[in-house]
Image 1 (cartoon, helix red, strand yellow):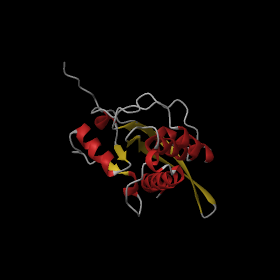
Image 2 (cartoon, helix red, strand yellow):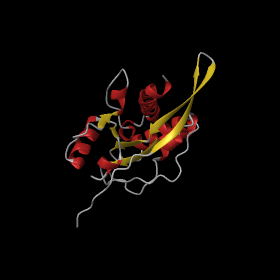
Image 3 (cartoon, helix red, strand yellow):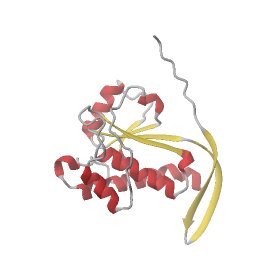
Image 4 (cartoon, helix red, strand yellow):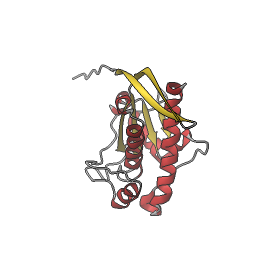
Length: 186
């Protein structure tokens, strides 16, 4: 059985509101929905933190129609599990909830579904490439590669430092969101 998938890009008319120098500036533009998938080892700490941080940024900017944001794991270790309690607590400290999350594993079909597949560390990238069989369209990157300080985000499951993970993930999501908005705000 051959499975064919038609790639559908969603076009929408969007309005962005930006604060520059204390003044509110609104600009309307034609946009293509950006589909982002954050990936880590188990999909219970770093990648769902990135997913829900980015969703809050998008919601705050009133850009929900422009983005589809999700997360996945490279392993099967935690499939079906919710966000790890300490990660959930760290998100809650910043006013972010993570309802309904259930860890899932990355699949080869995710490559065609998402525009950006973003790993948290080099090991994630290696496993992502193995699942996809490569990255012919250049969709795969590390989250902190979008910042001025590219590096891995340490896994808080092992370090137990969920605050450090939050800071790195927030910095990465902020830089990524700013880059994605650069063309829209000119």
